Length: 173
Image (cartoon, rainbow, N blue to C red):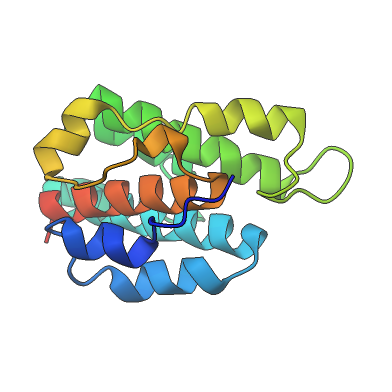
């Protein structure tokens, strides 16, 4: 499915608040599908780590997000802790978990090489969960004439990751 009047650039320039994320999004756009997914999740993981450290300095001083100590080392643990501490909404938690599950499909494929253009049935099911709630679209002032759920898979993934990155940045600029 191609949508001629839709581009990442028009999405960013028509919507407010994505300033400073252009370079990250440009990198995701030109990377291979696997690099796009892994890099986006790494960026979100670091964003979660940052808001956890700033909001609760004890997490940083106890090194709970560090690889050696591990309690909050995984992306999943950071998502769940950020939600438990009310740093992110339940809708944000669900979307980040959907992004994390797509990452897991790319990082640990079962069967042939996974891509957005030729997704496995498991990946297709996970991509359907990359739905950005309409209240989030409205709250962030995202301008799009085509519902995000109708966008091509890679663009939908990048948009979902960009929206989550913006939400994390708004929590801790």
